[in-house]
Length: 67
Image 1: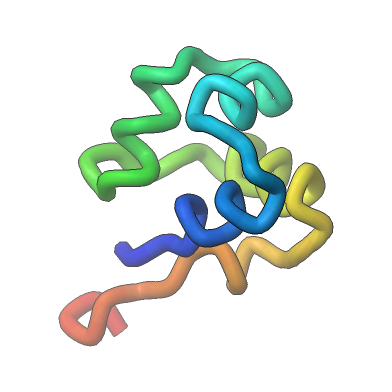
Image 2: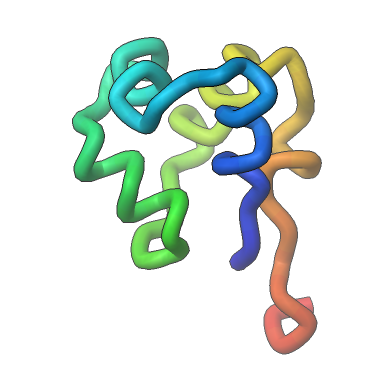
């Protein structure tokens, strides 16, 4: 699964720690999601979308293999 979390963070000039604080997880947890090592729960994905004022579909996309 691909994601645009890093791009969205850059738009707000936020660090991983900043975003992690806003969505209630650790920076290490966010790093795992951002690098694709961990897929977030639906609730967490929705929290991220709300913080960025966007949709889950903008933040997360299936890889070609997964589609």
